[in-house]
Amino acid sequence: MIELIVGGQGKGKTGKMLEKVNSEIKEASGNIVYLDKNTKHMYELNNKIRLVDVSEYDFSNCDEFYGFICGIISQDHDLEQVYFDNFKRIACIDDSDLESALDKFAALGEARKIKFCISIAAEEAVIPAKYKENIVVSL
Image 1 (cartoon, rainbow, N blue to C red):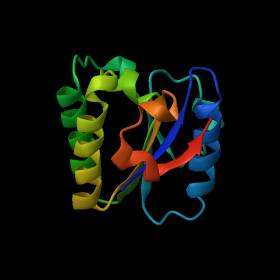
Image 2: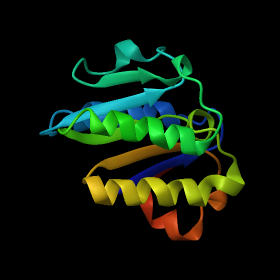
Image 3: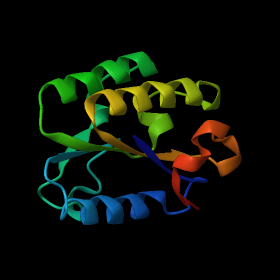
């Protein structure tokens, strides 16, 4: 399952995502991982949430990023939720690759029973039609 938080650059998606993940940890029975491009928000996250700074790893395309996520999942059988802040940037994709990337993570989420919450720096119009119903916040 995937949930999307969408909006233009600087609209407040990260703030909404931080609110969401911090409220979700109170109800979670498993582990939560938050992936970001730096550690800037480390102290805004509940200490039970694992922050991964993806800038420490060298991805050049979405397939490599997908493999990295599969590695995280394989090491944590209690993983319940994964948050991607600024998905297009951390996953090395552009608007033309967005639908296929979302397809991969939607299938992975269904297969492993993991919820992916994804922030995308794009207007709602850019989101593929089949994923519009997955938008939980549009800014």
